[in-house]
Length: 400
Image 1: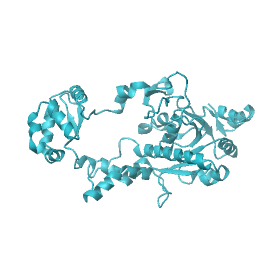
Image 2: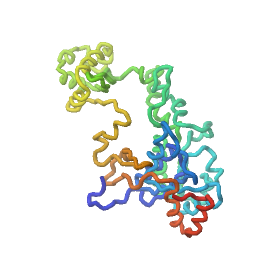
Image 3: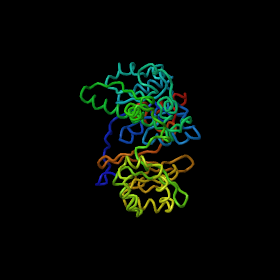
Image 4: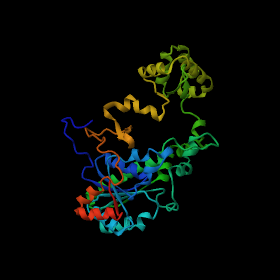
């Protein structure tokens, strides 16, 4: 992927500088999208490094996942000399994004009111737990808002609410932060003025719940959790294949039903008037599901995948995260990026999941070491080497 003449083509956000005061997922995911699209994103982290670097277990991959294509500046924001460096950066900055607890940036003198007074063109993205309102001062986490929004209720069976299997609210909140800041950037082109843009976990989670909220109004009934939902289609779930693997099949139209019956040579099912329409098949689901299960159980997983693909039927293997690195679709057109890890290991991760003309939104730089770009950034600001060395010596900034 890239320009056809082999020359590097400027990405859409080339020339835009972003200062990222963020950690964990929500803010860094916003910065990641901006960076992948070509913005110069400078990650501001403490002298001893973003604590996300040291997380383990479920969170072990957070830093390496969300911090490619950024420059790392390690600096003490509580020190006047540290804030002076930030002020010099701000004179050439277009966007600030931050996702710290409410009031943190204000205490550092880096809140929106402080900065907008001095830099009226600045776009300030605040990614928080909640938008303006009675909850806005509460701290929040992805899991907190999954429970608050009803997402956990809808994910698990009755009495067993479960968080989704990925940090969907963090990432959606980050992406909505991108949408807002880019819209503000477009407006600044017309007005010359920046503005405050907010994105939030809770409201992102409730946005995901919109169709369920509407469904309750239209049906007049409480929405049951997804494992117990009254399905809109008769066949829309996983089945066991002959080699003891799980296989998802979705038959969501009359055309799908016709192809399924033809494929497995079941003219009797196609001719059955009680199965003629989708509504008929939904009503007959208790009788129909075992028939479909028996058909699928007589074929291997690979046979089912091959037949469904050739006949245009919606299907899916049940994959695990570790399976994805070898997925042929993900690996097509260099869409998997090789991320370098400590100890010489590497990992393959999907690139930004969009195609945009002939732009190459791939890997320009690996996730940085603590303070990897500090000295280079100070030099670009015109700070003499001896002054930079003194800042390192005093612990105001951290070098590589």
